Structure formats: structure tokens, C-alpha cells
Image (tube, rainbow, N blue to C red):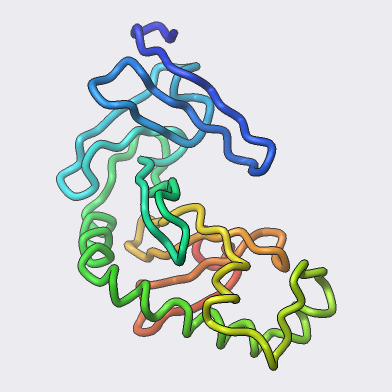
Length: 193
């Protein structure tokens, strides 16, 4: 229980690095990334585009999505902001554009991922031990998507946005940047600056 009377569970999983807070004191159960939601006073905002968001080093909310064969996966929607800053208009426009193009993105991402995988296959193979060996001859769009763990839909302060994913071959993770003219697959540092 925090100082404001909010209560819930703090949960840490052995299979990922993202603890979550499960808020039970509200009308509907809410799930947020991070411990600070119940440990400190937290700031909530009901944003015109994003809806209810909580500030914990960035504005965030968790939503359930069906992604590439995984039903009901919890994803964090994150709008980057420094303490005391609100979600800005560039982020709102980007979020609405992302929602509008969501189905197109979900269709296009596997094409971009297999292209990235094939173009970088030698580096991926050399430096990593992928449990199921997918080589250039047997990789498919479905199998390359199985190698990713979608974690966040991230919006930076300038309105750039994309998916942040964990993968076996890139320790800092991959970013699938959606806000450009075409989908770009790169390391997360290219989106999170």
C-alpha cells in the first residue's frame, strides 16, 4: 500500500528483466512496468490520444495485444519524457498515426525482419547461438518472428516511434522503427537516444 492508499502486487519474473506493478485499488486492474508505481507517489494523466498513462521515468501504460501467434501479450506503450514533462503534441500525432496504420505495420514487419536477418546473417550466425538454427535456406517470415520478443511500442519526444524487441543476437535489443518512409530494423540505440 502506498501513501495514497493504492495497493496491489509487485511482480518479478524469472524469464524477463521487467518487473511489473499490478494495481488492484482502481476500478479496473491496471498493469504497469516497473516497481515505482506502488513504492512512490505516482503521477497519472488521462491523455487525449494515449488515454490513461502513468509516469515512471517515462509515460507508460500496458495493453494486451495479439502479435504474431502470441495471444494476449502484455506490451508497454511508452512516451518518452523527462520528469515534470507531459506527453507532447508530436507524440500524440505519432500515436494516432501508428494506430491508424497498425494493420499495415503488422503485415510489413515480417518482410522487414526477414530482409534484415538475411542481410545480417553472417554476423548473427558468427556471434550467437540461436537455439533453432535458422539459416538462409530455411528461414521464413513466421520463423524469424519467433526469434523476437516484442516489449514496448516506444514514442520519442520528436514523434519517432517503433517497436523495441528483445532478440538472441543483439544484447541491447532491436528497434523496428515505423515512423519513417519505410520500416527500418536496427539496434534500439537508434530509436532511444
